[in-house]
Length: 435
Image (cartoon, rainbow, N blue to C red):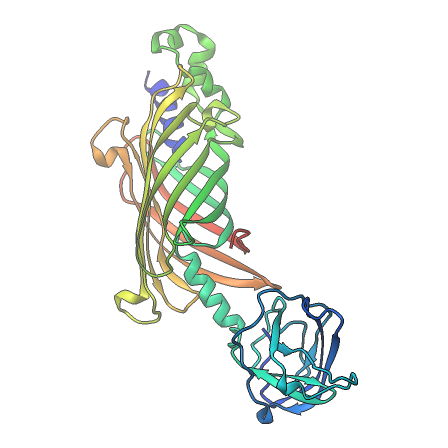
């Protein structure tokens, strides 16, 4: 009977589981074509050849028409370093003509529109001159310098520190857990690889984020798949059946496949620092390909987030720390009648010191509590502590978050318990399609 109970307990335990700056004050060449809808018969081609921007004057931006059309292509090259961009923001003036169709001074005309193109990600333009036949008609200098790569990564790192931030992350995480206890000879290994896309959607006029995070699990457990035949069978029937008795007597082996799937849906304020509170729903779907890889139940329950994100780094004060917790609880409400009902909690807590804008040192472990297990609270709960680091790098233009952590479990049952866990994750960050 002890081996039968061992097999059942072991299965239950393991399944919880914009432009470049014009610093030289000169632009070698600018070509810009536009056509006004209101004056379609006029089309002007503007070229600017090595004009000193310090001599140009800003143009008025008021009373611009509400409709206009901009066509053509633009490019410029900064004279100092030769870098090239394909975009800019510029106010342009429609040239005027006298009765003899001669070009009059463009400075007497009214600005009729703005041409705007997508930035190529280089640093910003300090000023840009628009010329007609070599004449400067204006400069717009409102553009802020675009952030450097380091500044961009720092801003993105701060955004991804928030579990309900606006960034989209494609997280792949691997956990290797060592299982021990009085009922186990030596140490067994549980390995779970999770794919967790974190998808954020702006709601309430972009003031809140709705985050959807499915968790797909590929699991390898130190249990023979035939142990699944014991589920729902009474101890007496196991003893009476030689095949089942043999399985109960030697439950260990190795079974690998898909585990149950978790779906977290949570919403909260769109913020990158300070206190953040969020709430939502969490579900577990019985998608395991083998009985021993899942719990066989559809489960549902609440989820919450409490977090404080600092806005500083490298100091030993509150603003240099990110702290918080993401608890989820599930009750079984449907599923295989042969499987035991569930009531379980997972709490991911994190305490991280921001050594640099992109590097964190601390821990982000998961507390697991099986409220149906025997014994007192510390038998039901697996509470780990850990130490690790989280960083960021780029592959070409793709920013990637990564982390490693070692964890040690302080509590757990005597017969079967998690001893230690080693975690690694990598998370490419992709553009939010809804931002």
